[in-house]
Length: 74
Image 1: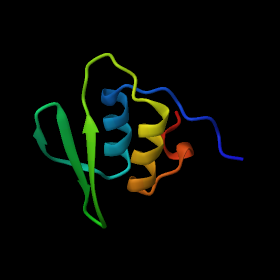
Image 2 (image 1 turned 30 degrees about the vertical axis):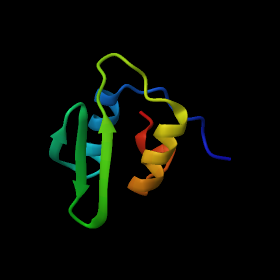
Image 3 (image 1 turned 120 degrees about the vertical axis):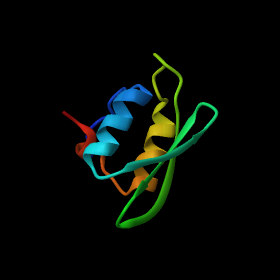
Image 4 (image 1 turned 90 degrees about the vertical axis):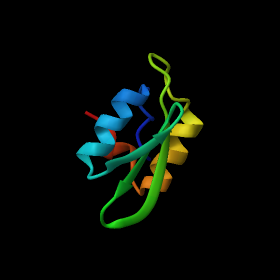
């Protein structure tokens, strides 16, 4: 059974993505884009300061990033 999804803000999620090799590739309004040098993936993260990313969106971002919840847990 996979662990419960953590509650993260966009800033915290971006930090975890960078730890897993994703790099910033630009932004469009309040959305930041990240790519991985070895994976053909472009992630879009909505950045709204202080707001928690919803569990459905977080799950979708992790699926696109090919990461498991364990990869972003402290």
